[in-house]
Image (tube, rainbow over all chains, first blue to last red; front, side, top):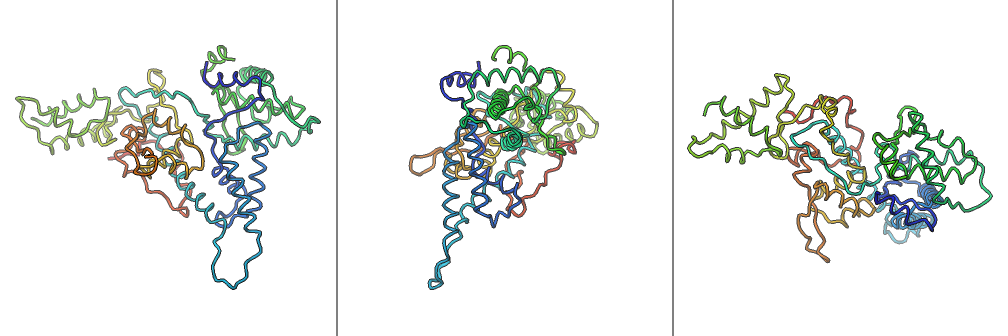
Length: 258
Length: 196
């Protein structure tokens, strides 16, 4: 039994929580929003960014995703910057130039961006060298796999989820408490389904769901399957559809663990 | 020793080696008792000749310089067939958070956990543990500051994993203005970039 499944079972009484360790982080989210909105990083419209950022946190909350403290700190930071920018300009008596309240944030974003770029360079090299074998190429085992959404980020999935949620009527019940059993059932169903067909686009997985709660349960089931590495998620670039398929060589794992 | 003899011996040594062979190691090994001392220049020249031969004769092996030494490896084009053997296992790819963290350690070493976390804006302890387990980074000391935090740096394993001869082979960090997509499509990559 994997460590992930132990955690899973431990939380039976509580509300179902998806714990994705080493979530990309607030800076990552901000850069994503900046890119998505095609904003100028040197002149960020703070109100817009803050609103979108908070919207994302709301979505994460409604999915019962663990929001790391850093996200909340950033939320507070954004609100703080926004309020500073809304203050009326000081009288021009004092020549002191107030630093643009966004400066520190922009500096941090740029610094992070530099290393993201460097990481891409490393990824490229790594990919090339994976095909080169040496004597006794050591198989490197990782004790605890982080969630690896290598080609599709959690944000992409959540955006796709928003689209699906948009066309489903809002439930009368305000709070969604997907219970562990329904998520597990959905996981089994999904795997069976993916077994029969070669794979599916993201939206198609939700075709049968009529309620918001059902959509959420399906989404959580998918996330858990991703975490257990039982399915792979890819993005077909041209159409930007997200493709879900059964991970290769996972049949034995499925039988013993679910 | 004759060139052809030396070449043959070097090839054997390279074949059995599981780690890149550093020149010093080679000289030490070649200085067998009773044998005539080996000329360093000769060894270097023979290694280069071997490299050329493998390349020009379309052999299935190549001699690469990696992690400060020499190693025999297969050619990347043959990967599909080699993987069919199922006796080799490709190392799993590093995740994006792992790569970002590794990039920070690479370009800022020696560096502490708080310094890394300040750049990424998230907790990095999990990722760092993974990277330590995979021996891509190691503890290189402690910082002379409050709490004496540990300092991290990259390893030889790191150089091997990324096919680098040495750290200076990496491109410098980009200024933001230059940050554009400039890495070619992987489909276009046929040859290993480490060229002699």
